[in-house]
Image (cartoon, rainbow, N blue to C red; front, side, top):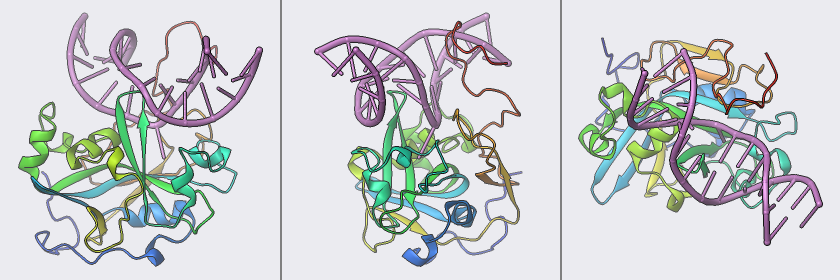
Length: 226
DNA sequence: GATATGATCACCT
DNA sequence: GGTGATCATATCG
C-alpha cells in the first residue's frame, strides 16, 4: 500500500511554506532528519515536479567527517558548501550522475545534507517521462541520482537558492513522516560508523539497505579487507 | 601533466 | 546479487 499522505493530512496540491535559513541552521545530523517530509520542487518550462523527501544523509564540515566533500577545505568543487545555508550543492558522480545537497550550516562551515530519495507527489507524468527506466512509482526518485533526474536538476542549478520565492528549485515544508529511522551512510568508505543516514521508516522509496556489506565492489585485486 | 578515486545506476545472470 | 560504464576532482610527480 502506498500511503500518499502518510501522517500530515495536508493537501499536497498546496505546497507548504518555504523553508527559512533558520530551519537549516544547526548540526547537519539534526537538520537532516527534519528535512524528511519536506517537498523539493522544480519549476521548469515543461511543468512542475515535487518530491517528498524520504531519505537524506548528513555531511559535516567541521573536520570530523572525512566523508564530506568539504573535508579538504573550500576547494572549487566544494566551495558552495561553505556559503550561506539554503543553497543547492550539485556534484557530478561516477562520471554519469548528478547528486543534490542542501547547504545547512552558517557561512564558512561546509556542512550539507545529501538528498537521497523521495516520493514524487506532483508531476508524476513528467517525472516518468524523464525516467523511462523506472517501472514502479517508487523507483522514480529512489536514489540520489534518480532524484535529480526526476526533478531535472543538473549543473545549471549549482548554487541555486532553495529558500527564495520564485527560485527555480525550492524547498517547502510538508507533513513530517510518522516515524524516522537512522543508520549508517551508504556508498562511502570512511566514517561508515556514523548513523547519519535518515529515512522515513514507512517509505518504500528508500535506497536498498546493505546490512554491513560493501555497497561497491571494485575490480578484483585491490581491497584486501574482509 | 598523469593517474587514482568516487556520497551511483542500469542491466545482466 | 554482481559488474561495467564513465568523467570531474584531487593529489602526486
